[in-house]
Length: 543
Image 1 (cartoon, rainbow, N blue to C red):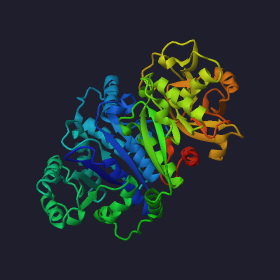
Image 2: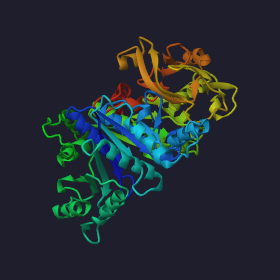
Image 3: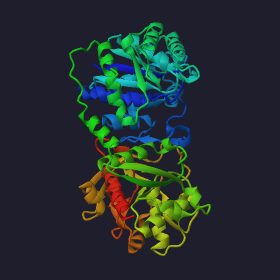
């Protein structure tokens, strides 16, 4: 029977609950336990799919087509356990489902209330599909004391009573700030945060204290005394040099040992952290460095491209080089900024996914620069579409080539997908369909041309990758684009939807309709990112 670990945060947001959950899960996994992590998001959006990346960072997509919180990316990267639809829920989704049932009359005239209906739905979600697991880690989004998170806190209070204290554990992530003027760490914010949580009926068993300076034993004992936990259960969490150092760091502070002790598990094997030590070594001792220019739309907020950032780092670790990322706003190339001056120092150019016309012409110019100068190029989703429009305009003689996403066009090289085949059958969509949850979402198979560059990179002709897009390269233009040197080297199994394009006459030029960054892991870098950074290393030696 699965044991539950509930993770809450206090004092301030952005303390790293998601990273803590991922690290703890990785440590338990390294001891031989089967784990899964779930995220409870209190906001009223049904999912993050329609939210601006500036609001909530990237949207992480699972194999089964769920649009989820970016923390699920951390979970996958640290554990290798593929996330599912059932691993992320929002208040919006819970309320939507309850109101749908109420409108149908499912409640037989009963008054629908937060308790028990909302809390029961949260508990059902927490318990679903847990039979084959040893530990389920449940992260509650937001900060304790937020109005919107109250139903979730109440639900975990009930769960702890129902499952028993031997099957549940509460971990509270909090802040111990350093006041420079006083020259000391202050414990009072943590005390207040724990008091707030306890007032809601949840007494934490373990405190993970984020702090800038080492936590003195006196302050540690003080926190333990006033927060009603064991001194050993007050775990200091200092800033790490890399997120991939965190599991080893938390193990050194005794986090996983204290969790197992709290569950009464004493005769357990020590964790095998060999893979994590190797990752840390590759990260800390690179044998060179490369600079990758990412020409995007949301570059002022790196969390908008979180998985991409990490996938590039994984590619660097695979090649034992440090990857420096230069975030370049595509719009600056539309304002007349010197494109060559910005891009010439780059050892590789990457155009990521995105939506909308803003910055598109700057991205197209970046593709042109990479093609003409022989700089390694990698286009993801919209990046591939921009590569096709660039090819159409400049190598295939289609001057007015554009995308219907940007408005009416006589040459729709990129257009709205109106239908595609999924596991559920034929999916159809029109121009006026709701935006949320209506894209081509989740894992789809593709067939690669046997002699293509990508088939060599993958070492296979059949692949499966995750998608999130509403528009697709128009297959009717394939022949004209290929006549200009852009080869369609990957297609959907039915041969209808272009998945990969490449240029055989270029050192490394690949565009993909999917998001390979979502499947990259530090201990298993995605082959495309591994290959892209390898090409960038070669380019760095030529410059």
